[in-house]
Image 1: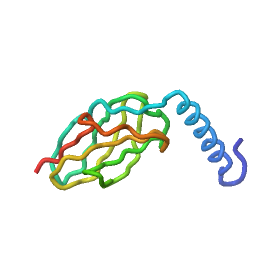
Image 2 (image 1 turned 120 degrees about the horizontal axis):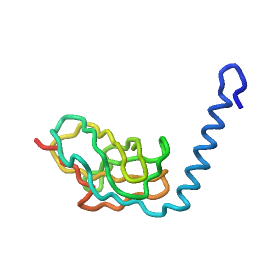
Image 3 (image 1 turned 135 degrees about the vertical axis):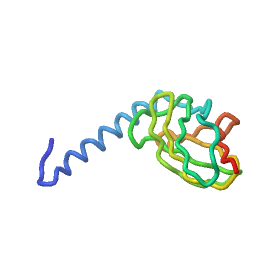
Image 4 (image 1 turned 180 degrees about the vertical axis):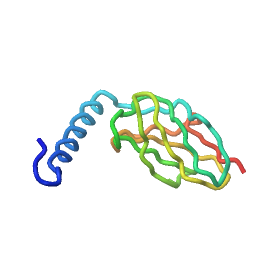
Length: 123
């Protein structure tokens, strides 16, 4: 269903399909759990590319988000590019400290914070 000079109708169809697939997956996946972050540390002041392992992730482009949390403060929110058991996340640079990574499946429900979701920026 591509019509119009710019092909915008195709984008609408894709967005609608993504919503249907996301809803269908979300009705089956009720919990999100992070089991580990690889690597679990890196140099302070540098961006980090990590893989967050766990369950309950939605394997759809732009369906999952990752929050970088320190204490009770959200430092950043970025897209997480996920399969069903792992998400690739690009963490922005940070000062030396430990942070936790919370994954939101389609903004419906988050993973609980545990020791398994920690990433440490080393000084």
